[in-house]
Length: 356
Ligand SMILES: *Cc1c(COP(=O)(O)O)cnc(C)c1O
Image 1 (cartoon, rainbow, N blue to C red):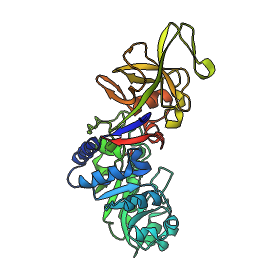
Image 2: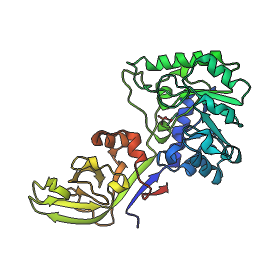
Image 3: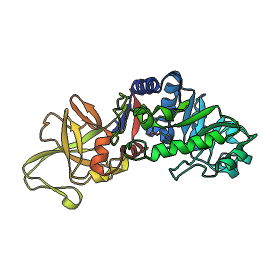
Image 4: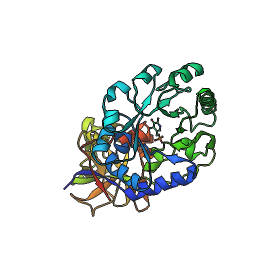
């Protein structure tokens, strides 16, 4: 019996994908982002399903992730967004992967169709060079796409996105010809309807997995999506403790009254943030209940005073929904002082995944 697992709904992923497609409109193709094992949802199964939904492009971070998909029969185009041309070697051709080039000096080494990323102001990956220099470097090469990535796309109090878009347009206008694919938008610009940044291809990740950002002074979001992943653990032990009992490492929690506690089979080695110690909640018997004391490596103690019916072998929900009670990655992130992306990607490899 599994002690800790995630349940991924491929139907939810498909519904989320269609929601993004509808928001992007018929002129715009989708390149769902399945990097980092599809934000821990399972890159192979998610990619198969997205292909069935009509995705012609998928995006990953590195060459190994692209090879992994090819070896599992994924046939869509695969864009490798964060690697070097040299790292790919023969794999670009052998596995039909498409590199993103971030440095003009790499262009002479590319012999397959490539996308060029422009650093329009994010200050991370991408080329930052004068327009004329970029235009000269790409002339006569198999440039297939041009892209950029925004640093502050949920923040409508910042001018950064508008500035980045203007810079992108300047580069685009200087090119000898318009590449086949033009893309700038991850989930946020699609959600907030920044149509001028859609180009003819968008790169949603977060929304496909069922999340959108709140935005700052942002227009009302377009996307209605639902989290596709639930995370569960089994109760290993239940017991009654007396008032004043100390719970876990450092006796961080002391029972204010007699309590029924449960020890569950999930800890920080499974990805449950240690920062949830004495602070986080899980759902047990349909109700949110407190994490007591320190989250330890393999187990965590919770309050089960409200649920005498639960015992060893019963499941609790770390992330997901039971009836009215819901905990999503955003709620966990808020308590743990991190971001929801990191909560999802942080669910460790030893947590088994089942598709429901
Ligand atoms: C991760 C990533 C995306 C997807 O971002 P979401 O916020 O998950 O939609 C898009 N483009 C690039 C370059 C990325 O690295």
